[in-house]
Image 1 (cartoon, rainbow, N blue to C red):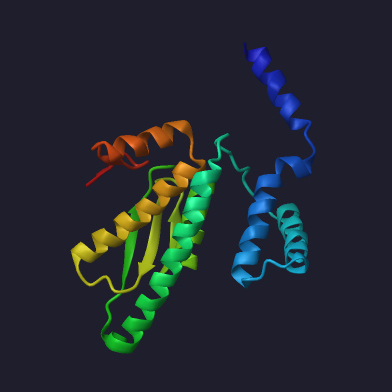
Image 2: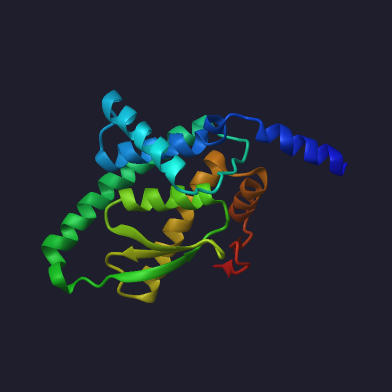
Length: 203
């Protein structure tokens, strides 16, 4: 059995470098386009060149894929994301005009279910693209995001923000999480408590 595993690992190591890094490169290019809000061919090609240079110059851990991707869930997530960006944009405008400097912000620790670097990165980028929230730090060991959130003056509003971010993770798990993570999310819908990677049950 051990010889079989070693042989499989050696076989996997024979893959070209570009294939091993392909998921990471694609993700970096998509992030580049999102940051510039420009998905033209020229900008994406330039982003691909930068992604290749970054992947060659710096050590980046390999991205472990779950082996599943639900295209329908992905489309629904995209539509939901666009809706959230529009709603949050009007909310931030309202807060800026009506409350101004009286608004109280907070840095909130948000433990996640999955220790996957891909899912943590995806959640972080979704948050950063929705106005009013920004990831300031990531604790990979406990799969915890530290998020700066606008208009969170009370414990109840902090809990609401935390639950909203964990909902984003749940939606992304439905798109590309592992079967075990998807089963846990489905169990939550049936009444089971949310269990984070750190082992802390959430209300």
